[in-house]
Image 1 (cartoon, rainbow, N blue to C red):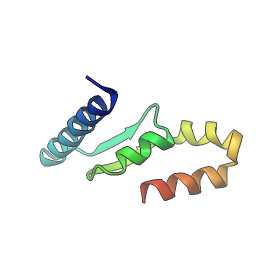
Image 2 (image 1 turned 135 degrees about the vertical axis):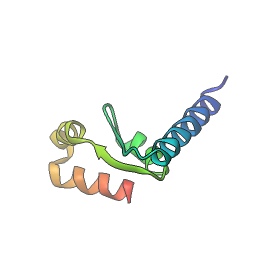
Image 3 (image 1 turned 30 degrees about the vertical axis):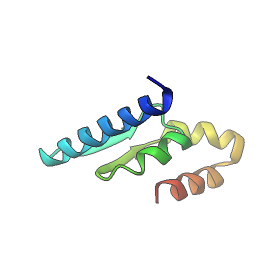
Image 4 (image 1 turned 120 degrees about the vertical axis):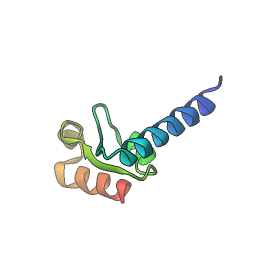
Length: 78
């Protein structure tokens, strides 16, 4: 299986899992290892209530500054 197809399969699995969790009344939170790239992908899945990104933001802010890092992340998920 090629990488693009594998990524697509995992994305669809995540979408189904988020949808099912919402149907049965669970809030879905994403985090642990999130990056700007993965946030772009996850932001396309409706039903994720919260992103736990504190560790990522602080780590990235070393390179970009906290204000720029937060702004970049907000632009991605909105």
